[in-house]
Length: 199
Image 1 (cartoon, rainbow, N blue to C red):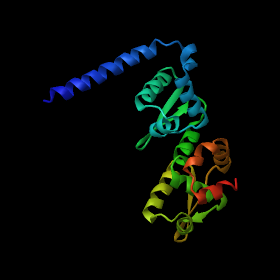
Image 2: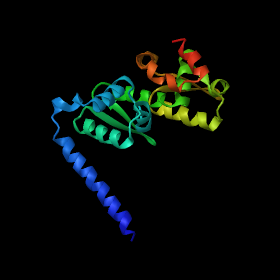
Image 3: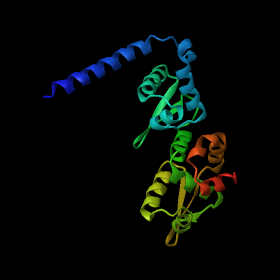
Image 4: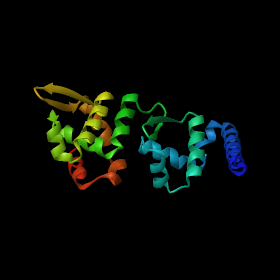
C-alpha cells in the first residue's frame, strides 16, 4: 500500500467534511452576501446549464473555490445539478422546467445547437440536408439526432426512404434562444452567428 497516497486521500476527505459542516452552519439569509458566491449564483442565473469547467473559465476562479461555493449553494437549495453525459450542469432551483433544462443542456453543445438553429429555419429536413449544412460525419449526426428526439426536442417522421426532422416545440426553443442568447456567443462560429442573427 502507498501510505502517502492513502494519507493524502484521507486528508482531502477530512477537509471536504469540514467544509461541508461549515456550509450547513451558514444562515440562508447570508448565503449571497459573499461576493464570490453571489457572482457564481448570478452567472448560473444568466447562463443556465453551464458545466463546471465553463464556469471556472468564465469566472476565472480556482476550481477548489468554485466546488466549495457550488456545494454551499446546492446544500442551501438555491441551485440544482443535472447530469448530462460527461457534464454536470447547473441551474437555479425552481426557475426552469425539466424540458427547458433538456433543451438548454443540448444547446450548450455546438453540434446540437447548430442542428436546432438550422431546423428552426428549415422545418422537416432530412439527414442529407442537415449534413449539407453542418458537414460532420453521418454517424455523428445520427447520434445527436437520436438524442434530440429522445428528449423530445425534435420530432422524426419517416417518408419513403428518408427520415425528416423538425422541432417539437419551436415557441419554447425560440424563448430559450432569445432569453439566453448572449450566454452562447463566445462559442459561436460564423455560420452559427449568421443563423442566430435571423432570430
